[in-house]
Length: 83
Image (cartoon, rainbow, N blue to C red; front, side):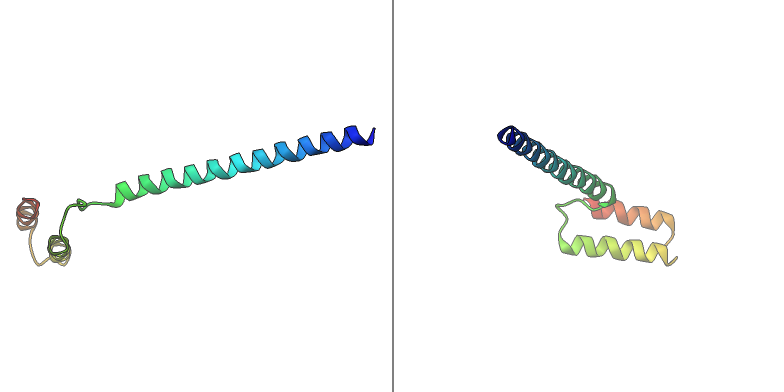
């Protein structure tokens, strides 16, 4: 009888470890999916932009935010930086 209980205990331990491994893998996949989605939403600058272009876009946004340029000037600058 003790041998049977030992075998059942082994199976229970195996299934518990398998369930924990699947839960951990699912958590990792969910975290990566949420991270990728968040990164896509917050990225407004194309990956191909050079550091100089990124700096110019940041300066343009800052000038617009500070009221140094109007909306028309901001939009024109944005179009010119996209080319």
